[in-house]
Length: 414
Image (cartoon, rainbow, N blue to C red; front, side, top):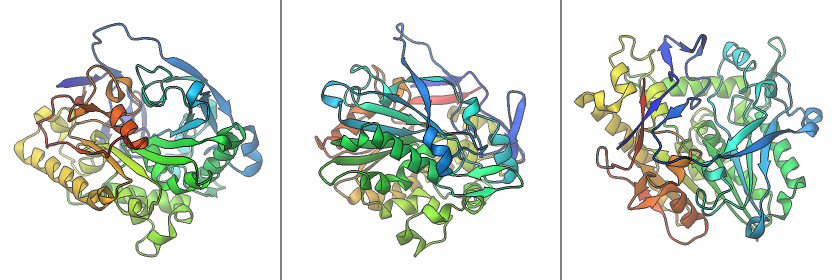
């Protein structure tokens, strides 16, 4: 079993505020997966393709701006050969902001302003341009849409006194219009994907994405690490439901959630994938770790629910969990399996739920497609997603419970 040590401290949570280096910000609201992974590599790794940031100049006049009013942006690497008319659009993740205070902090980071975004980012995993790293999508047009609104590209409001723009829905629309003008309108194949908060966004926007294309185009969606459960935390509370409630209310997300869901449930419930997926008509694939480390750390056992820190050792390394703690985590996995049961019945859906302590497995090369990638029944994630997308096989891959899978790249926090 591979253990990945996090070189940057994931977070020291304290009563609603956590520290990251010398900075502090509110728990759950900011960086979900912004950490550096270190792992001994058996051989020198090829340099990844670096792709430039493009700001969407037309977005400003449409009100499609980041939290601080700056222009949104994306990174595009053009397809070639047989993939010249195929498009992969990947939505960046990075938490949410659920209060004015959180969003004011966030607007001074790359998660709320393009002023702080990197000019170039590496394209790895599902974004790689190398067939040996990304067998099915390497020669497609591959896009990463940057995330700077704090509500999974789905809010539409503002707070004038705090000088905050909540324009995720408009950013999504402006980005799609831009990409269509860049050649995506000619796509005969398209895949909307996303990781974490971007994985939730890929569910929310899946049917909208399909509506951009003619019926003759093959259009599907992939949510990686985006299946956030409406789960009870270790104190009996609902930490994530409280967070999502703040996001939905502050950013008026209900305007952009499926009416068919809102007819049955409250807006916060309709922001949870377990309630959303049944309202999505476009073929969708759920990729998730059954013991999602972000949910373990920030939803199930955050410091607000564990003030004495009895979960600290377990959260940093699953090998330190007591039998009762492990049972709590097994119950979480069982809830996830139960919540995807109806979803998985459809012939057009795909699943890859591995029993790993991980989060976001499509973006990182070692988990997407490598010599020692995570497997279910000898199939790595990249092959499972490709088999499903191209209808080569039905893919409903659900792992046996921990600790049976020795192919995991489990995360261990220093």
